[in-house]
Length: 396
Image (cartoon, rainbow, N blue to C red; front, top):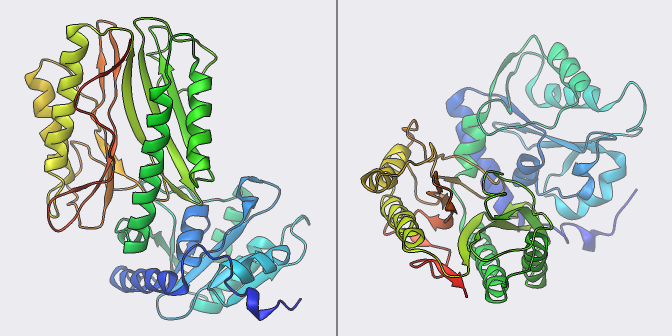
């Protein structure tokens, strides 16, 4: 089917040169790692390098897409023929290899993907796959086993260094996206907190924030972790419930906005009613721990040093921290680099981090959450988050 040339790349998320730059960087890293071909199947990686966008990723009826990169040649996008028009308007990749009957058994997808790899890399290419930390490929097991058996003459390796070596460092366009997305997340949370009152429920607050974010341009939420009260503090990363707030509750709003595949991840704590002096003391520890961590967010600083900066403040106060106080963020909710005591990886300018030294009070006062976005620059860290954080907010 022919498409009107005026619709070519009409609906792409970023201009063509953004994807070409990303691909060129990946090719440089492929050469360093000795990879001839990289096969990408997850939504985030396919979209990041190709721009191809579709709402089909949540469907398991047939594979959505695969992207095959070569270290010197232009990439190939493997999709169902059904998606050709979508690809025409969203991806810069010119070479498409399609399968015509996506619901047929056996499926054509795996065969066409093997053909694409061989087209670019030959029969004995060294191939990188989405293997390793923070990577979750989008594979049907039968397709995966078929592809692996057919490509067995080649050497199979991890492409993690290529993927994250490109994606961790945000371009200026990505930074603008993250600044804007963080700002509308903050605005939505601010509106919802302003109107908090006893009797409201977790569901109502989550819905209000989501509505406010989407009114400002977001096209979804990345997640909603909202909980309050002694019967809810232990429910880590749980969905909001139809539970009304009562006097004495500590409310955790941990939520993110989504625009296309980019997401935010921020958290703030609010006390329903008058907080005790101990509430304020613990919250102050969180604020000081976060400030210490953010001050360490400089290029060349090992990730674990950021963790230790926050941990030292927490330990001095006689409290216990978690084993992670932050992570990278962008197209995935949790990206490298992870701010843990085990991670020697140095920070680099262009990273965006979610810094989050949460504290769980064992005496039952609650969960004290603070999570905000920081851009690592060549100079002082840039705080993308803007909500006032220095004192515990009370709803009285």
